[in-house]
Image 1 (cartoon, helix red, strand yellow):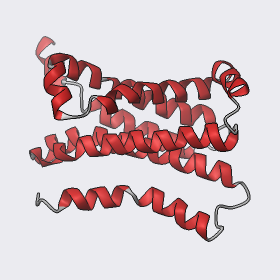
Image 2 (cartoon, rainbow, N blue to C red):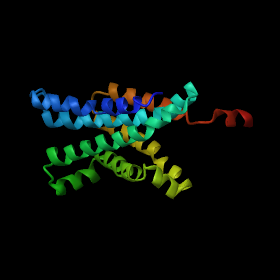
Image 3 (cartoon, rainbow, N blue to C red):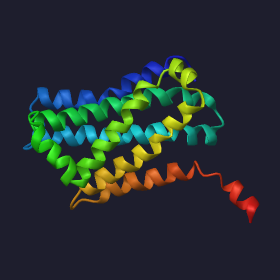
Image 4 (cartoon, rainbow, N blue to C red):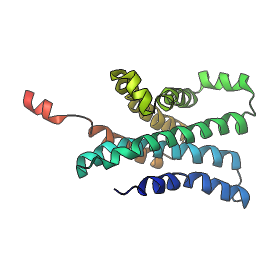
Length: 193
């Protein structure tokens, strides 16, 4: 893939931010603007997590290592949108009133698991550079395998949040299962049979 693909993917990754900026500027956020902003960035966080996970299957399918070049950038965008999602929830919904927020974290399972997923993303973002990968050596891979736990937490967060509409969360769940199945080495199982 050509060198200009990376900047193109970077610019495309800013699209969710552009959508909300446009809707905010033109007063098109709907009757519940706070919910719209929080849900928008939450969904895009999941999309970027799944895009990050899809780079390895795409490498296997196409037999091209080029896909892996986008993985770090997509992962950092997942953290970026997760942080906006979190800040929107804390700032717009709770007005930075931490007492009821902490209460919700421990009482509502969808808040707890969403907050846990965001916390787990922090060390991945901090250690995403080549320098950190060299420094951590084999531990880097172990640490970054947390993305599987984070993705499961993210989908569960969406499922538990959606009290009546299950179609979107179900789509995310199906995509996640397919992406995780790509990581299973079925040849090991077949050789044991």
